[in-house]
Each structure stands twice: as structure tokens, then as C-alpha cells.
Image (cartoon, rainbow, N blue to C red; front, side, top):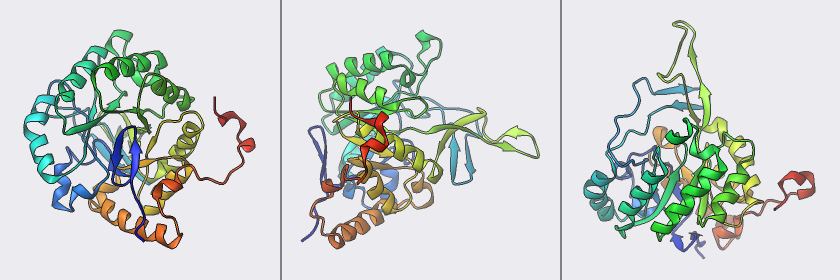
Length: 315
């Protein structure tokens, strides 16, 4: 019997747990040159802002050991152009679409959500909260629990479908932020965004990206994010979408065993754009071999004694 790969994020049913990570495949339609994107659980767009953004000056991407640094600066075509130009293409391709949004003001998150709520083909939102709050002196929304709560609460009122909050790992206890998102009505949390990193050219003695520091992604961060997924799984009851360092299908299974309901594939798409298709095939074979009838049975199935990690107990 073919294993059941379906998972749920709130009321949203995904045909499988494989999603794309925001910012790693443009708006999603670019991947259609490599495989049928309708086979994915969901396609997550790059971050959209109210108005188009050029982004940061180059160089803004640098390869490092076991990963990459990026500081793109949210370059995008703006929400209206996305709705008018990209959504018709994505609908034709049959993809389930979740849109990632970013802003510098709470009011702009609300305006973005309202604009997207009117398009029923957009099945969910993912809130990118790694932007500076201009009213609070540049502090990132995602590093302040109170502000995160305010954004989620305000967006929840205007967007009726699946709402996911993408959490930054650059905090002491990520579970506190996940609990805040859950309390304000989020349907799920993405764990996590990139880690702050830096690289230097030893000959020029200059930073390898224009903004000096950037976001570290790739295989190097998987063990770090795995621990955060496990932490969050013991703190909330809403689904977790794991994102960080997934390069082989076994990584997907690991994350699910640690507590994730779904995963987002990111940096791997730069080296092998059709990787998700291979992951799905291999996961189906793995589930059949292990006599697991549904992939949902893997979620949180880690065989570990919680007394060994008392600080992660629920509550």
C-alpha cells in the first residue's frame, strides 16, 4: 500500500510535508523548469513587501564551508505585481501557494495581509519577522515577544486562512516566541530563519558580503535548528515547519521525528533544483520499508527521555 504523505497546518491540508523555503526559488514558478511544482506540499514565495525593493548592494551572497551567507535585502517586485503577474502563472502550474511577507511597520504587515486575503488562491501567509521595527529604534520584530504578539494578533484579524510565523533562531529561547505566536492564533511556526554569520577575504581583508554580516544557511546549521525544533515541539501544540540545512531525504525524516510536521527546502535548491522530487520518492520508499502507513506517524516520534532535558518540558 502506498504510504499516506498528507499533513495539516491548521485547516490547510498539504499533499506531503515538502515545501520550498522563502527566498530560495524566487516566486516558485522558476522551479517549473526542473520539475512539476504541483507535486510539492506547498510553494512558499520570496518575501513580499508593499512596494518593490531593489535590495542590498552586491556582493550579497557568499559560499562558506558547509553553507552560504546571504544578505539580499528583501529584493522583490512588490505585492501588487505579485498578485497580477505571478499568481496567474502559479495557478496554471497547480501549486499550493503560501506567501511570505515582510515589513518595517506593524501597519504594513496588516496592509499586506489585507491585500493578499482577497486572493483565494493564496492558501496561507508566512510572516517574516526579521525586519527592523522603525518605531522601536531598529529592533527586529522577531526578537521582541511583545511586538511579535501584536503583529500576529493584528494579521490574524484580517487574514482568514493558514497563518504561519517564521521565527528567528537568534534569540535565547525560541520556544517563548513560538508560544506567543500560538497564543495569538497562528496555525503554525517555521523554525527557523537563518543564523547571523560573517566571512572575511583574507587577501583583501574585506567582508565577503557588502553588509558585513548576513544569514547563514546550509548543512552547517541543521543540528542547531534540529535542537530548536525539538525545543519548540515541547512548548506548543501547533504544527512546526522545520527549515535549515536539509540536503538529503534523511534530513526531512530527522526533522519530523524531532517534532516537525513539514519542512522547507532552501539552500539545497541552489545546487540541485529538483531535489524535492527526489526527496518525495525516497521518503515513500523509506516509509514502505519501515511499514509506516502515514508520514504523520513520524511527527514527534523521537525515542528520548525528557528527564534528560528538563528545561524543555511543556509549559
